[in-house]
Length: 100
Image (cartoon, rainbow, N blue to C red; front, side, top):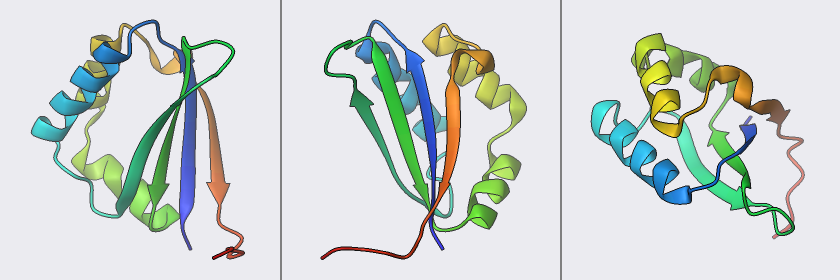
């Protein structure tokens, strides 16, 4: 069953995020089980962004911590000028209800 990680933060420059994600792709590659990563901007406050990661399963998400080290996570956050505490996070589990 798929799951979503929602991570919301304030970020003034989306170019920094694009560059950090490019770096992450080069260093870590595509995590097995990651179906998509999409970034959304708040319409009323463009500096507020949400990243949605869709994973095949909670187990795939947990397994990503093996290939994506604490040091790499720290480097990614440093490239954004943020810390782990800069994000509001929520994990969402699929209900299986889908509309075509």
